Picture (cartoon, helix red, strand yellow):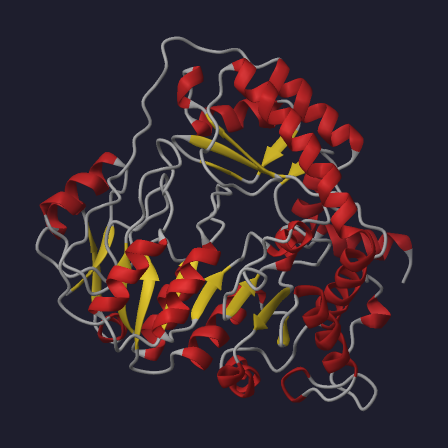
Length: 451
């Protein structure tokens, strides 16, 4: 194939063209994936894009090289068993809930669960019991789950199959996983952690497995040099280890990406040799950026947080997080997330010196507005009544209506304003007047309800 023919093909591929066009803008990446497009050891050769062969093993029946890579990953995390996922943290969450809870069980969830956990609960017919967050991180942020609140809910639900929490959250705020795991241990209930944003915490001795969790779903591609879709499911509970692979195979593709799995293997090798030093150095850089942010007038999340996540609360500087993101974007700095209250940057050791310089310059050039603005924040403490289990919603006809017309109806989806990332209503719950007011306040104009 000659160059002209190659150009003709590329010009006729809109997604490919858009990716190349965006990459050509040379913006500094402070979003996923963690490799930032600058990791030289990523396996990108087409010749390595293979399938299950006698020499390459099979993901869900692995006994050879894939199993060896999992054993080495388990060594990194101090886990009894680690399973590879090329289907993202979603597959790890699906496998984790299936192996530990299973169909028809009761699970105690923190309210800020990812949609993949909501969907899995619907598919498995899980009966969810909710723990609400305490508003202790800052205005517009979800807050944390506390061990004493877990203890109270466990005492009220002795038949719970598991406790499931998200930590750290999108903003980097971390719950007391060590304390929660002790409470769960007293009740003989496994603690499952959605650690999607915290795989790198192993470098700081603060990984959920290190802190006593029974299992963790870790979205490695978010903060490590891993191709998108690469994740690990770590397990320290002998009772579930034998079910992990079969549970993941219920949801996973029979054609996993070998390039993604190889990138996990390489990232593990990098973490073992260089990860602790690299992330420790990065935490020093982030600490300096936080001091600069406070000097400018930004707010920061309070309490224990991910040492390398940079979240700027923008209300004190007279701007919404979305407006601040537009400013940073104009400076060539692409953030991970923004909402009414905050802008979030994911930094990794693969951000270049020029990336960090550009971010610092953008912060130094930030023009503080006056007066300060108030973020439109929904109330986290409201739990609406429930009419049916999430699974019952799955097979009902639904229709989209305005929040005003939804009052008294049964929600067919999770309505989750940002901030603070805690759903106002979950599938099967009754949309009451308070829900309606929150939905309107946060700009949600349509919601699916059961007909």
